[in-house]
Length: 388
Ligand code: AOS
Ligand code: ZN
Ligand code: ZN
Image (cartoon, rainbow, N blue to C red; front, side, top):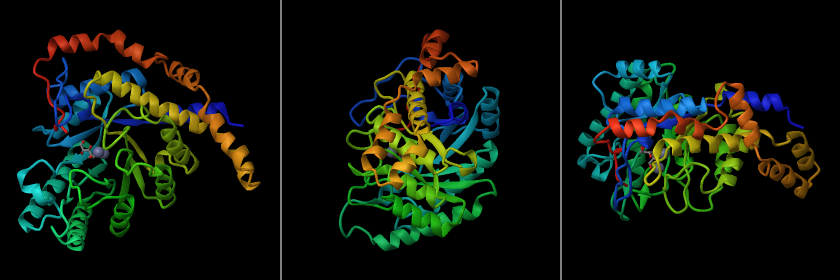
């Protein structure tokens, strides 16, 4: 049996970090559909994020992307965030949107380009110092398109050198979150294609380097929850970039395409202690809302993560272990499915009401009139940073 008040406490404590770029206009390589009222600067992105936090009570952190969110005074931006009841979350480096990076950033064969890329990463740590952020999130578009294009091992050496220099620069409370991705934009080799590569680099770097699992970055059929269980066991799971995929790196709303997969992931998180704040697992969203209204889409995604978490917390671990120990395959599977098939919406409504929130976050947001207000006030909204 599960302890209902412990489940409620765990749900109340869970924090989900939202991405600044999720509030901006975005699209595909074919078209960016501009929406009315989207933010024109990082301050307005924070204002939108504050709406998500007000409606859910669960999203006080916002990831920034540099230079998409470049400002003159980062300390002032962080103070502004605090004034809205928010904190600055991960600082996402960007070493993929510059002509110099055509053949790679930190793995580029040209030492001048590598220097430029590492300098940007170091600048991101300066921004962490100024904002109080603890997480440097590194995703590298680096790779090759053709066999023979470059020396795969030499590129790993260059990557290791760059990571080591940045690692040395980290403060005591700061860490690297290293993200992997199977393909795109490079199509033959990516320099950090999978969790094993990221894990090996993090292991060599030390305790302040951990792996980020972006749920959209695997080959079809990959058992992501196995990766999660393994990394947690090794103390190397830094966090998630949650989103949904049907085909490639679709960046759709978390829990929309495959809520069962999200449940299976959260089951491993819960079972392996990943909900405890001291484990340091960051539950981030990495999404773009191309055709749907952005703030409600982020709220929906937060709710989807909460629902998957609630179901994972409802797994009867005693019954599960007993069935597993007895080798009772069907009974063990039934325990998991019972939890998954529970309607947890009343439980979450209760948790929200207990925290003084509207039990229905989407209705709460709509009632604010924020969408209408910003559509009238904000003219000339900002692109999230990329069109693909
Ligand atoms: C890229 O595919 C990765 O998912 C990154 O985490 C992120 O989406 C990118 O930095 C843009 O936000
Ligand atoms: Zn990501
Ligand atoms: Zn991605």
